[in-house]
Length: 258
Image 1: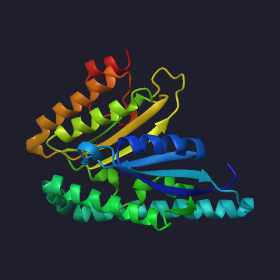
Image 2 (image 1 turned 180 degrees about the vertical axis):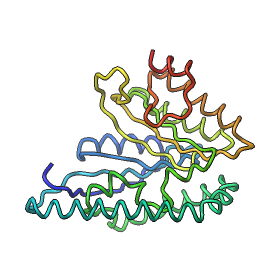
Image 3 (image 1 turned 90 degrees about the horizontal axis):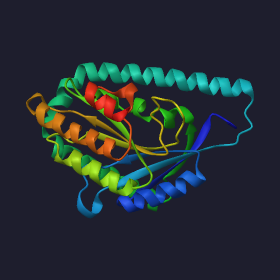
Image 4 (image 1 turned 60 degrees about the horizontal axis):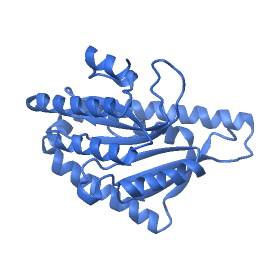
């Protein structure tokens, strides 16, 4: 690793085909990639997304300077997390109330975010250099923290699927989410490589990370959608990320990890 800094390039993709084509290029030209996905986009726009590609930057910093940058970065990360927790504690109920109108609110937000990404891309302002912590812990630099948006009845589901058939997998999984009474508040796609661990989450493929914020009255319908996600993942030979798991039943666990 030449330095603690990375160059970030943000590339909008209009649909699932553009997403996979962009990912193929980014995986060749960058060192890491993470993708924001609009889980509310339907029809021809399904898979609409923004690919964030990162590659390490060569710099002539001394070891002392690198340590200084990292210490400042970790301090900033810690302060931001504390601020996010404090704001969520104060305004969390307001956010939960707003998410009673989750579908229209998230649909509008996602459309605006994608439109802004298109604008910065077309005007040549979609790239910048920043400390790798900002890229690696992007969710921790948001207010409120993304993992707290799930609310008191919420949970995260992250699942993998092979690159073979990735288009069909992405479309199927997003359509299942859209059939839920409470589709995910945030959806992130990542690229992975396989290793030999018996309970390894890593696959030679992609993962989708969903953060659900179901309302109490809709827990049963939301759970049914999650079960369909798990069924589709098993059928496609994928895995569920156990470190984030809050939903697998014993029977489902043995199906995912036979």
